[in-house]
Length: 313
Ligand code: PBG
Figure 1 (cartoon, helix red, strand yellow):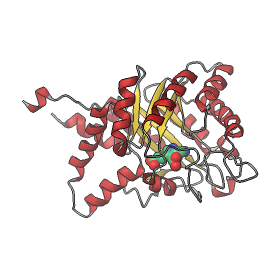
Figure 2 (cartoon, helix red, strand yellow; figure 1 turned 90 degrees about the vertical axis):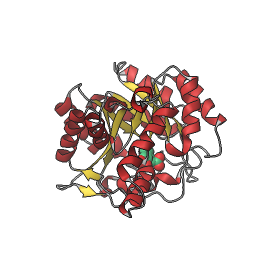
Figure 3 (spheres, protein in one colour; figure 1 turned 135 degrees about the vertical axis):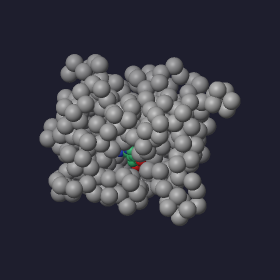
Figure 4 (tube, helix red, strand yellow; figure 1 turned 30 degrees about the horizontal axis):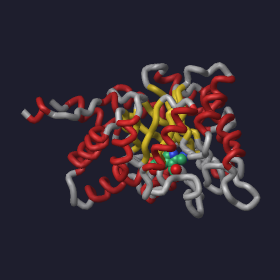
């Protein structure tokens, strides 16, 4: 009876797998703060993409981890056609074609030696407009490398419009923009910093949102839509379900939510100690995010959850 009347149903196609690929490694490198998640080699990333596809997951979101020596103030590895993310995009597209939607994180923090999402002005603050120029170039190299969707995640003002224009200029009108619309300055990104080997000192409070604010997200939403966002995202997911619900009610574009590294780590850590039932907790968090209004969920459990959903009655 419960099954018949359930108001929310999860489907493997709702899930998108975020994945890390590290330059110059021959074995996958485990991420300590995210048990079960690794920095992939080019080869294991290809395999992970195929596994996700076979499990019914609809997309993969790629993050590049460059060699330490290739990081610089401008994050030039992020716009190098032979940079790790671009190489990985080509690898994965060659493997999955159009069967799996291939997405790329469009942000500089993985590539800058200071770890910020943008380039810095002389006074050490992130320079919004100079960063937009870098994002435009990133969008173009990522699209050229085969991204179906780019995800500008740096929270610079005007980033969606600049990325849309840059794509259109090179004839990539059919590459979609997944806007990180409501992205909060969150402690739950902690494990991600290890995942991408980020050297960030300080915080992202000058460009990411204050957890105290809800109305601000609605303003970000209006701007992103006006600038041409095809899909919008709320991030993190779990602590911001009210934001997600409000965004989902307000728009008619697809809405995504990102269940981030710290959300993953909390469940895994508690489960390791035997304090909660891991599998039930995973499904409960995903169902909650879906119920709040996300059509798509980015989750590190995507492949596993998709398999579980397929074998569930
Ligand atoms: C920025 C970016 C971050 C995450 C995704 N894209 C880090 C940040 O904004 O600090 C976090 C994802 C996660 O924590 O799982 N490139």
